[in-house]
Amino acid sequence: MTKLKIDQISRTFPARHGHPPTRALEPIDLSVANNDFVTILGPSGCGKSTLLRIVAGLDRPTSGRVILDGKEVSGPGADRGMVFQSYTLFPWLTVRENIAFGLRERGVSEAERNKIANGFVHRIGLSGFENHWPKQLSGGMQQRTAIARALANDPKILLLDEPFGALDNQTRVLMQEMLLGIWERDQKTVLFVTHDIEEAIFLGSRVIVMSARPGRIKAEIAVDLPHPRSYKIKTTPGFIGLKERLVEEIRAESLKVAADA
Amino acid sequence: MRPLHPVTSKQRAAYGLAFFVLFVTLWASATFGGYISKTFLASPLTMLKEGWDLLTKFGFLFDIGMTIWRVLGGFALAAIVAVPLGVVMGAYKSIEAFLEPFVSFARYLPASAFIPLLILWAGIGELQKLLVIFIGSVFQIILMVTVTVGNTRRDLVEAAYTLGASDRGIIGRVLLPSAAPEIAEILRLVLGWAWTYVIVAELIGSSSGIGHMITDSQALLNTGQIIFGIIVIGLIGLVSDFLFKAFNAWLFPWKLA
Image (cartoon, rainbow over all chains, first blue to last red; front, side, top):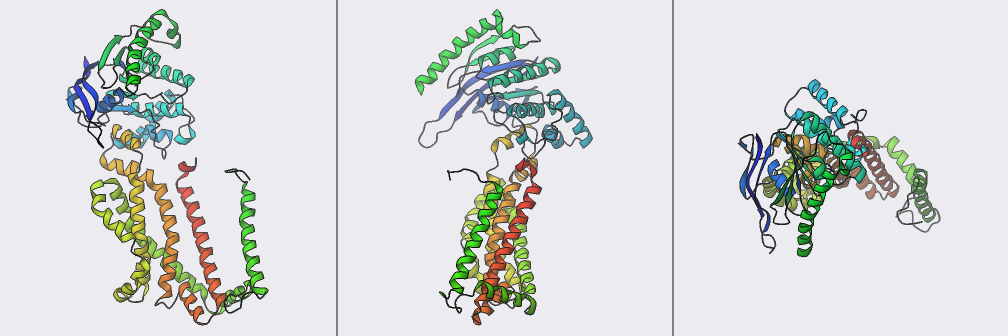
């Protein structure tokens, strides 16, 4: 069953200061099934974040439409939870209040809010930090809270824009396992943007490879690795085979970017 | 000494105090040594004696109270008008485009130049004093609050939208709390300027206040009283600044965490 349909989405940024208009995205088609975990992989500047922002409703496409559960997306909304690469927790709210932000906006009672938020605090392993401010947390803890904040709203789809891009390698691997654990248990439709090949394979059921600017879908590769996955899967022949394939695909695109620069 | 090398809080206090001591020493040696005539500059001891007389014989405490009242009154009026306006201008770009050019222009109108007009319009009563401070503060606060609110991190606003925030929710739950600490800092800064306006307002057409005392003392060539008045203003400013800072720190603990 199709949950999200991206229908001929393109995006051209208008001309500015004598520079010609930038074509960020060629018309793109993509269908995401219910509870699918799709990773979008591409070199930097390929428009993958733009695509995600259009799905979130934070940017408008030049043409095409985004359809979620049969309804066209016209702006940002609570049905599409988003986690950003930059740390976007509200610095004046505690961990618990951050997680409950969307619930409060919907008018959920305080008792109910706290109950839901406490449940998430426990699941992301931040028990004891409920009343901490974001400033007092490490980058990994902040992004875990940001994921919980998006999930607490129970969105139809979770959009992640390189959420672990700013973290150190060890933390990133742990965060991937945590996110995958949540997905394996709770089932959620997920669109995950990254430029990290291993991350794209480890997390995704499908990897969408995007070409360098203007962005379009270059390849689509199914990841037939069993769940639940642990970090050990990264050394299996199946994983390495996929990685080799994707390295070739991405390398061709990165070379194009380097030649343009 | 190396660039940016920190000092301990004890050292900081000692250095700060040392300059006051040096300052008073220079003042004392210039006056007691007879290098400067008593007519032009009173010695520290004369100043203290005159100050004591002011407080005990001439009801100077009442003047101080009047001045504080005027500053706080005019400042509060300005803040009540300017903060909401600045928030709305920061949040809505069309309202900013409508009002910002005029406010930028009005900001450069010197409050002291309005005093003759204000005396004509409002007499020489309290209202006139409040209005001088109001005019001196209100446009500054509006502009600075507008800029602060307009500079709210876009990614926080976007995050709030994806969490289902309405436009009202964005203003009430993102723009305001995000800008609040800086708005408090702006108010602290402008309160300092308001002290300048109040003295100017009291120098002309006033029958009470620190500024009035200073004009009176000028007529009597009593530099001791004038200096005492100026020092009192400085001390009140220092105390109010300290209280404001402490209040802000108490209000926004997340900023210091």
